[in-house]
Image 1: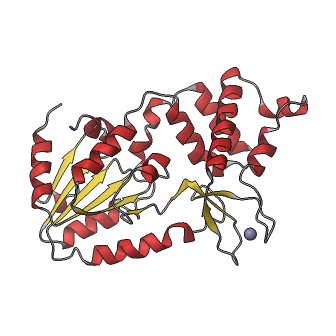
Image 2: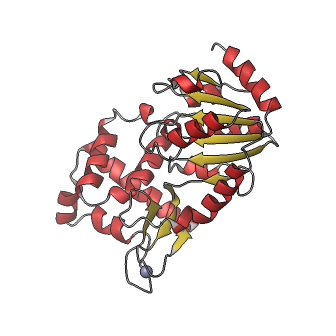
Length: 282
Ligand SMILES: [Zn+2]
């Protein structure tokens, strides 16, 4: 790998007083399984059966089936940031990102994560972490969906034939709210009635932290962020970089690496996959 950009990045990190890190969908490594027929069949089943709220869990599961270095790359990134004053924001709902031991309170995931569940009621605003047992059950459910998808078995026909009813299991898997009687769903943007309470406390810390960056030497790392949720990371980061006179901006992205003309002086764009970049870091 051509490592010149990496040397400048190390220097930029050393100089920076604060580091703003944006993580996007490239960390989910869909490139490794998106063309797999079983992945596609499973995804289609979720889409067609009102189970889109399980998409993040399906993505997380499919990642466990392939040889991905995403976890290692995230840990390398964390170690690279070291004791610096950083804040991480993610548009991905990946469990790996949620599970990485960043500095306490320095991660915000506005699109939610599949390790929390919610009841959709407006009154209770209830969001809570999944128990270990629920995590395990969810994994087994995804495993079952994979098995059926791989065999080309229609889950509904299996249910009609007296086998496991996948849809029914999915709807009951996280239990039922004892106040309003709704079935719990994962707390992510893929769930109807997404409860933003799951990340708002962190969001408040994040916006306060951002206010403190204005006259500081700021390093912005936009890593593998696409355009799907562009108002969360891509556009705001460009704006922050534009207004901060002491800012350095790195955009690493396999496909969407181009910089806007205003940022060319402050910015460096690296047209590489972020997982490859940080997995190779040592
Ligand atoms: Zn409820």
